[in-house]
Amino acid sequence: MSRFFSEKYSSLTPYTPGEQPQDMKYVKLNTNESPFPTSQKAVDAAAEAAKRLQLYSDPEARALTAKFCEVFGFERDEVIFTNGSDEVLNFAFMAFCDETHGAVFPNISYGFYPVFAELNRVPYTELPLRHDFTIDVDAYCGVGKTIFIANPNAPTGIALKRAEIEKILRSNPNNVVVIDEAYVDFGAESCLPLVRTYDNLLVAQTFSKSRSMAGARLGFGVGNPALIRDLNTIKYSTNPYNVNAMTMAAGIGVLSDEAYTQRNCQAIQENRAFTVDALRSMGFAVTDSVANFIFIRHIMVDGETIYRKLKERGVLVRHFTKPAICDYNRVTIGTREQMQILLDTLRDILKEGV
Ligand code: PMP
Image (cartoon, rainbow, N blue to C red; front, side):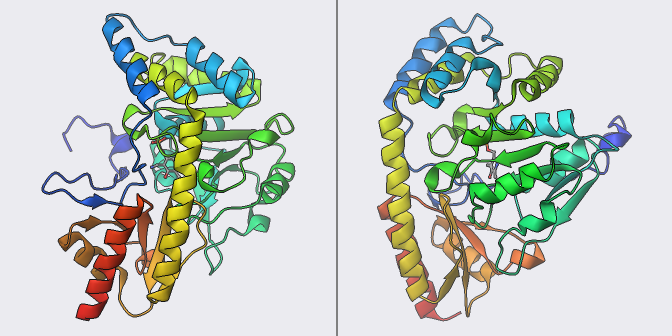
């Protein structure tokens, strides 16, 4: 820390992104990226946009918004595009929380929530998951704070039903409920159909996972126009050009290729079912994930050992050191070939005896 660093950030512990190692070629199952290439339509559109980078990107994202509204059936004042969904989540912390209006989220969830809270000096409460890692819906009812829930949750992959989220929305009419649907396209129920019923609902989604665009950084929020106006106030007070021109073009391209996205999501779900069955037969406890990752623990071997031995053999998964989940590893669902390598490698590790 330099002697110039603002005291208000001096105790901040930043988010630790998953490893992006350069030392060797891994079967990379640690950051929940898509194993499938970006849609060719997105790549071509981005290349075309790259010819005009002398111009600023459109701060209103009009072309992308129009395409989005056509595909998703919303009006333009119901959506905001951001630099990844991380940005819309941060905007929500800035817009709907402050020193006197705190946030709540599960104690085991996306690691960025407490960081955004601390960055914005928002007091927060982490509500414990049940022993089976499910969210205790009643604990959120009438809680009187801004609520952040990842659905499906990360790193467990377990989802709430839309009706359960409605219960939370109805019991917190004076608080914003942010539903982070980064992984919703792999089998969970989206809350987008509730946006017009509940003026306190903000749904955050991303193009990073189901649309194979993690490197382009494109996310969005959908909600009541008044909520979106608030988020735009934050956006125009920080970075009006938050989404670059190539990414916007790529976003339009991928939204013109929904069949490709659907096929990829289908493949991930099939590969997940195949992997979960095989892992259970090998003595792994696996949560009921509806995301593009699974959360696994072996009955005999500790999580850190599995993580390390996999890494030595060129397979990278995500291990968390938090005591409640340190026995587990989060494994991204990749192609069938990648899953086969994971399973073969795990069999070798278990056979070797640890
Ligand atoms: N929410 C959750 C639960 C996530 O796991 C991630 C990915 N790290 C994000 C949001 C943010 O993704 P992105 O910024 O790439 O849209």
